[in-house]
Image 1 (cartoon, one colour):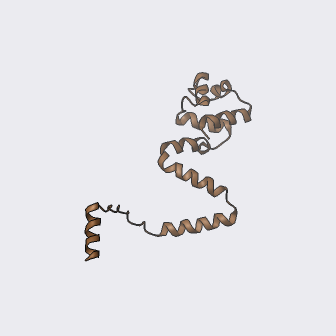
Image 2: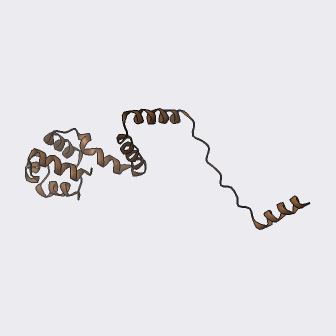
Length: 132
């Protein structure tokens, strides 16, 4: 869930408006907090700490989505894997973990080299050799 959505939901759950959040956060005006809640800006570290404290959640809960945007190539696959894992029953999860641990213990296979396509000249010389 994007940070803006998380902020909106948590503020709503606490019954707090952007104005009320802004008054509780150092160096944050109503316009700035509103921009965070719309996803137009991101809060700084001190402001994230204050938001987490005011909203009663760990900073990590606010940063979870933000962290996924820092390395999308890696985290997209991780998110998909986690979503699939969560959709499984306990027995399936155990099997997947066993397979993953086994694969992680094995060295990665060497990269495959592409095979060259046979040209007409190569095919005709093979045909000629086979017919002799």
